[in-house]
Amino acid sequence: MNAKLSIDLSKLTENARNVTAQCKACGISVMGVTKGVSGSLPVARAMVNGGVEYLADARLRNLKKLKSLDVPKVLLRVPALSEVAELVEYADISLNSEIRTIERIAEEAVKAGKVHKLILMVDIGEYREGVLPEEIIPTVERINRLEGVRLYGLGTTLTCIHGVIPDETNLGELVEIAKQIEVQFKLTLPVISGGNSSSYYLVQNGSIPRQITNLRLGETILLGRETAYGNQIEDLNRDVFVFRAEIVELKRKPSKPKGNIGMDAFGKIPKFADKGFRQRALLSAGIQDVVPEYLIPADPAVEIVGGSSDYLVVDLTDCSKEYTLGDYISFYLTYGGIVQLCTSEYVVKEFVE
Ligand SMILES: *Cc1c(COP(=O)(O)O)cnc(C)c1O
Image 1: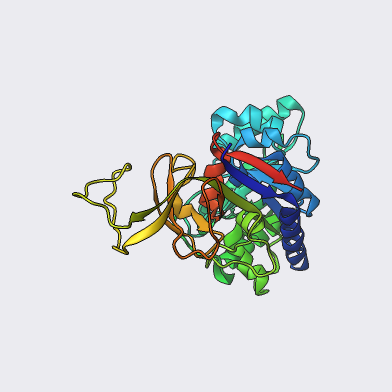
Image 2 (image 1 turned 45 degrees about the horizontal axis):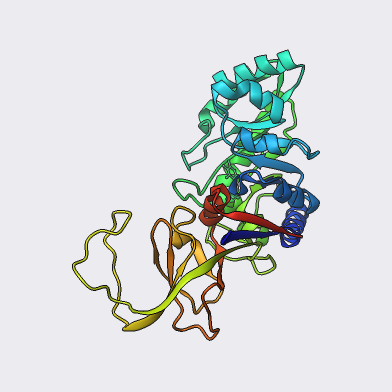
């Protein structure tokens, strides 16, 4: 195969070890999030080796693959009513926001002789999933009357569809609600989950509220990035994932097309600068495998020109390395890139130990 995604498991374990140590110093446990890699078992195992205490994924189908690993499994996407029986079988914990679904989970858990743990999602401003703060107390009252489920914690999601940045104010609000519940219902909440990789910068700069006890981290571990401001983290490996595609055509061609310009293969009107003749390579993978915007050339002198469904086009004119037909061009990836490549059946996945 001529398009490969290599995944360096040692570098991944290093990232997980570093991130879990930083979090631990702030009293925070880590859920290692595997949805970016379709719940890959080797990736999940590398995360566990690096110290994550839980594995979390948005899909039950992915959690099923992780059954053999002996850490609690968490379903991140609020469960569908139609998957509650499977939820109870494959997940120990789930993020929830609908009392009707929670009641169904309780019934199924009782049938299965289990106690399923709930993290109740509180919507503190992102307005994606979660119960609004004023509805939390009545919801907890109803959960407390149920058998088969136990309120294990509160959680929140930020910086997802509306880009709200986690800070001491909004996470402080979550902490206040948690305290109120602990006092009013005389219980302890082992998990107060303060978000995803966009909350990691608060760990780095030491300003995460002390009562936050958990984060759910995918991108930070996989790609070494925090996602509130999109910065690469110095001590973490950015090259756990490397995508390689083979040069299938290599020719000097004009950079400005000849003829009238209409739409490209995906309905967009292309724009380009006239830079004269350039050394152009066509690579053996296209938009069907990965969108060019998700790729970061490992050699900074490689310029991505564009792509169609089956080719990526790159400009190699400024490279000091002399590429030839049959060589591979390497790319680092954004999160969207690993999601897409991991789900493409045309791309070989190679694990490097
Ligand atoms: C995807 C997801 C995460 C992990 O997000 P990252 O940005 O990869 O850290 C955490 N929580 C929920 C609810 C998610 O859906």
